[in-house]
Image 1 (spheres, helix red, strand yellow):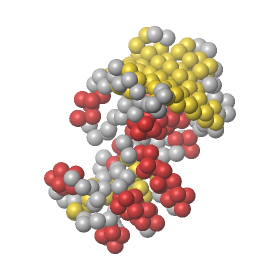
Image 2 (spheres, one colour):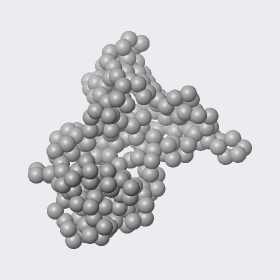
Image 3 (cartoon, helix red, strand yellow):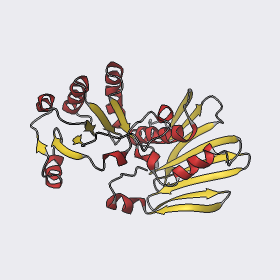
Image 4 (spheres, rainbow, N blue to C red):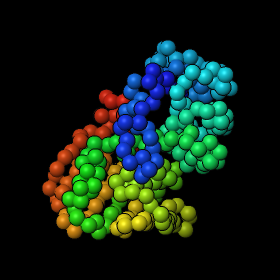
Length: 275
């Protein structure tokens, strides 16, 4: 996908860029225009029907000579998509990489590209823009919980075992969220527990950084998808919980804010929500 905006892609919605490492938010694309589509397979027809002004290109090579766009949205990991992303980045394009189901291979393949063309690769991680997390970030910044003692992020996947691709994708989203709230991590220890047949039953990661309390990320099977972030400090505890029905923020067991129906919100707004 190729977005063109009269005043370019703005950076005003993200603060602490060194911590978050993402100078672009999804909201910044609201005034952008979809001008071209390539390598989208069966989605091409639907995209053109939604954006009739966009031009359907035969392949990514036609885009190298076209130019005139501000950014390229990459949302797949097929060989033509990855090769097109490499060549477009080398030509100076900014890549907005959607962290979806193809995230592990996509980011693995684009790691060398980022080293070769610094500043061209920008992951789109919408979980950091969820309502209520701004409130939590403000409280942490103003030290309303006092000295932080521990951080625990618990997530469940439906079923009896864990899907590896979903596990990797969720890890990218969740660690990005934690970095935005807490700062940079410098240490990581990860374990995945499997049964004799190799099926993953549980995943645990511990994260550490300068002046940070113990941070743990755990995933296990459950009835439904969801997550729970618990931030404990000397002066209290705050909890954020999310499932496919609502997002809630609690302080010491008392509800503070809620955002109902994540799925319904996805259908009526332009900002995707990822559990």
